[in-house]
Length: 95
Image (cartoon, rainbow, N blue to C red; front, side):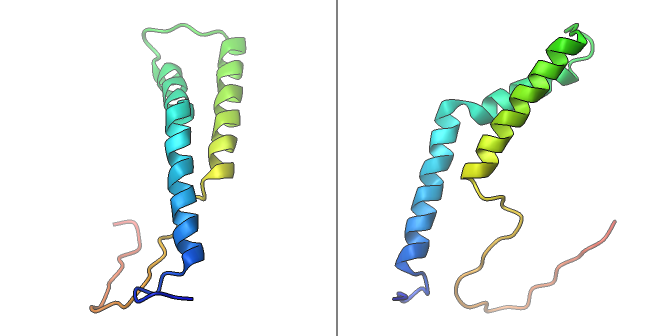
């Protein structure tokens, strides 16, 4: 049954669960760890890494990204609910 805003109970529950998963992933440090690995790999001046260390860091980052992707839907599209009251223009291209 849809409410006055057009949001069903299932959609509300899905949004609540997704927000809880985001909080859990943030608390678990998965996203932060991936960012730290990325910064280490980009730090060409200060940190000397051998190929085994780089391979291990990449593998850890890939595993964490798979965990994140599994539990959080990619936000490639934004779902709109309700009425649109104005015209929307989207510029698509290289500039």
